[in-house]
Image (cartoon, rainbow, N blue to C red; front, top):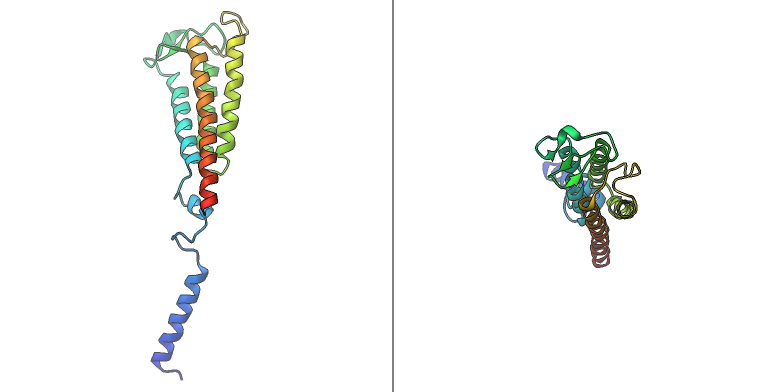
Length: 180
């Protein structure tokens, strides 16, 4: 029968061996493990979350009287809608829903590795909205979103901001990977 000292020594050795096999919460755990636990969000994920929150709030805000002037003139789509978010940006039900869904997508991207794709892809998509806004006659039925000059300027800023955030996040991610 082994003595007490030998038993404690074997237990200590097994404990050290099992702790070497188990991932710890220290810097030795993989970045994907830390991200799953909500630690060490990348810059891309933080930017995606911030943009997502802003889009979601804009989409919801378009349905709130007071934040949206001429709320009684809010229509499903098109030039019939004379409601304006913050008194500046022309909105419709469709416009609000698009902003809210884009925001939800960005918030989802902030929790996954595809945040860079959503930021860059969303920025390029908004460049398409910018082109649409500058090409379409604002008083025609083709202006189904509807957009006005303030929307066009905002969409230029959003597209540049999304693409810029994606590129900055990628640069930081690459620099971090080269160091690590």
